[in-house]
Length: 319
Image (cartoon, rainbow, N blue to C red; front, side, top):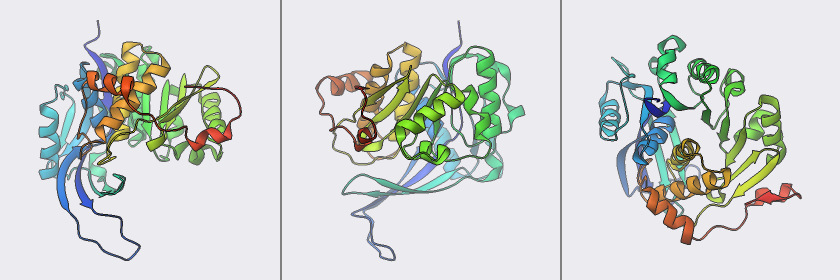
């Protein structure tokens, strides 16, 4: 029996959310409506989501010793997530972000900074930290460290999920050990040079051999390739206040789905529902919903029309 259902290795951040009435033109200015300090971060938020859904979850990462680091630490303490291997870095500010939220759409623009003193080195991750869990979730930032963690997981038959949204040096050393690749909508083209998302996902999957190659599409849902077939899951229509953290919650819900043994169709649907509900409140973890609320949205919620991404493909798409 594993001690944890999921362990996450990767980023956390403390955000300053700035709500504006609309995005100004270049060189322009608008008054902001309010600003809020809010904890977030790709892996940290995904692992919090797993815990709130009922999984036994562990987070491995680094946190600064400034005010923003303390806000992040306090936010994690009340979630049930195991923090035994979270390091407080003395004299180091926490990763932070300033996030502009357009009130008219809920879309956000992010400006972030992560000092090098927060870097996780491979030797700081031990085999027992990874093998204590049934699933490993990573991002791509500290590439050598997450590659090390993913190699341990693969050697011990532990599935690996990854959240990646930009090109990281050395990330090719991570991809061969990934089972579930779920990227931003921009990553597949940037990595492969292929504009057609179907061909890009195929290239990624056939090059690196992951079980599922997928991409989130923001307001349009998610697209995945599995066992030679494409699966499209449309997003849900909600009253969107803030899209910050929607992808992180999607990944947390997807980790939960893998642990629970859901089909790919149900995993994408459930993850889309959880991400949509998080958009109805302000902050990266503004509304990590209960499973019952996500199920209610799945049963009765309105779905968006099929995305323009489907125009690239004339063959059958599940979903």
